[in-house]
Image 1 (cartoon, rainbow, N blue to C red):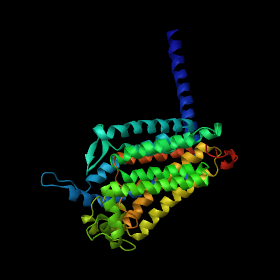
Image 2 (image 1 turned 135 degrees about the horizontal axis):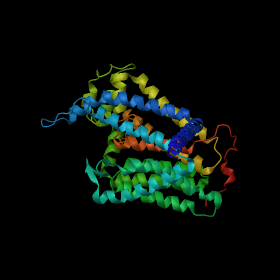
Image 3 (image 1 turned 90 degrees about the vertical axis):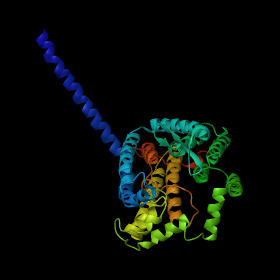
Image 4 (image 1 turned 120 degrees about the horizontal axis):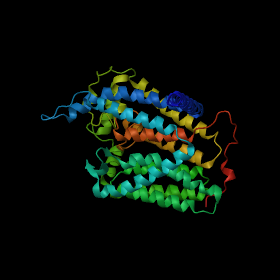
Length: 403
């Protein structure tokens, strides 16, 4: 009997393992069929460009931050960036395998957790350069960066309530949510993120079928907020004044533009740039200028086209969807991602006041690299669709006016 049992057990275990491996391969095959492979490829290309770009910018920042007591190697930020990118790739692929429902729940959970974290920042947050935006949880994280993963999903979920009952006060709820986030961000203060979240909110409200009068009211409120920020937020006022007045040769934005143009069309060559050495935040806010100096304006143009391609591909995919939540969540996430990218680029071109925003997927970002990858992974999960099923495309006219 013992011999028979010992003979059967390995066979049964082997069969279970075979079934498990087949199930796993089947799940991966389904994921590969349903995922937006074009967007995934574009994201990976940008991350590869970011790896090389941080290697180019790392010496400038390492030397500026080195002291007699502590010397940083030229590739200090590059090696740290590699570790964060590895975590970012895990987050990207891990979240992209989720079902749409699971991704929705995770996004709402992240939004709720980060809203709570934002409430803690004024009391226990770490202050850097006069701004209190970070929480030290063993590793320093910026809650507003991770809020970007959940905010469009939470907002889309609330706006999609209209499909069930268009009498629900979704407009009032979203206005209250955006107002709370705006107050918490300006308490840090973080005017740039406030504007980015407000723009995302406006895009989703517009897409959800808001009538013209409410659009005008929202635009008026936005102008009023900018005017109030100009009057009461000194750092923002100084940046706007410097932008409008042209600044001086020593302003960060002016230094960034000079660095950007120094390489001409094809650049000075890797690690051959000289102006980047006088540029503050070369590896983060102004990495686009370092790319321009060492790799040329031609490579800068390629990067801009890659961001534009991600926006175009994601929006094109939304036109094939059949429900309001997916359209709003997907469009909101890609609008937020693209908005941050193009604000950073415009700042480097001296076409926009300095905002302290990194270039997503390209800049050294620490935990924000994980946040961006998580956001894009959720985007890929939410927009997963069976390519063999034809769907009726969603139309806003089926929903009616916003309550």
